[in-house]
Image (cartoon, rainbow, N blue to C red; front, side):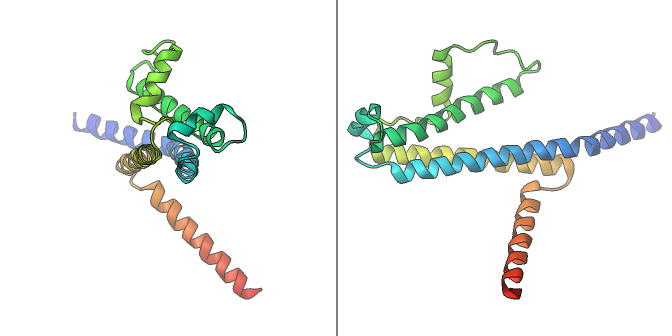
Amino acid sequence: KEIDNIMKRRAAAFEKEESAPQAEQAFFNAASQNKMIDNYIDRAIDQTDLSSAGLASASSIIGGTPAANLNAILETIQADSAFSTLQAMREASKTGGALGSVSERELSLLTNSRAAISQSQSPEQLRKHLREYKDVRNKALSRTAKAFEKDYGYNPMKIQQENQAEQSQGIKILRRIR
């Protein structure tokens, strides 16, 4: 029985080692997506004022207005919110298909399940909700990194930060040489 347990632990360790590169790539893809949406959120916060949100949101149907520009960014953020929620629900399902097809109304509800991001809100309220959504996304990525570290013994975020610091240092050295 003891030998069976040892063999099972070795097999599990081997499977983890084999799956680490794919898991790491999936993590970095998620981190990249997170950074992209963070940039959209920052742009939306910067563009949110009395000329683009609240009562001015009615002018979002007129191309080239501050409200139309903000609306385009918010649509990307809202789509991310909906699809992130959908993905989380699918991953929580054993078969991944428990949701079936999703109606437009359900997708709208999913969009607002993580953050109440509506251009018709006051600028202050919209900026607050955008910051909250950004915080939720970053906390989720941090939890994912911690779970990855628990499973594989290292934190890919820390390694990425160290690599970026080394690259930055290398660039500084090359600039001094020139």
